[in-house]
Length: 139
Length: 160
Image (cartoon, rainbow over the protein chains, first blue to last red):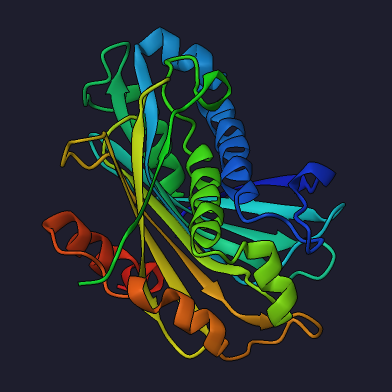
């Protein structure tokens, strides 16, 4: 397995549902935040990168398995692992872990595909990104 | 063939990114809102159902496959059916397409565990809920609906 990218997300009150737990729809947002941070370590900011290379990283598929509930104020450790880098797409796995207990909160995978801007046609991932993602894969 | 519930959405300014493409996370909100409209259409608003049956319905698996980018202000038909109902879980499947078109824009699924309102422990799907959902349990015909059904279990897919 390659090297993982790690970050931390603190659960905000607006992510809480009437049961007092993190609303399931908050996790896709957390993933975008973590993904943006990962990209910023690889290729500067996501928007700068997308503009410079005329590419949009389009979320093609997202799968999330929820193991336990998280609550307001919890600190969630997020780990991303690059699993597969192809010419047109990249797939990563992720896991959210409670920093207080070490228990798994959720996990799953995301596949991103490269689309050209502004016409949104399929295009190869920019070579620079592909190389850096593959480096993460192999470490 | 089971029934499907249909509703519509139109992505607003706050739902799209700088390319005027739907933020993927917004689809989870649409799924949840579709579920709420679905139960309302059955005469059993979800909040009342949770209170009356003394249950919660936490999501244990959620997934979405975006076939094509969805654009700002694009009218969307959202279809929902019950893909599977086991002893303690219910799986909703979703298909998104433009009105009057067979083009699939997105497929989704939510698997829900039924837990007790007090102890948050898994319990059997209450009979009242089973009766409400029964007409929607089998997915409709059609290749994409079949695909949604076969794709609707992330756990099966990811274990391969």
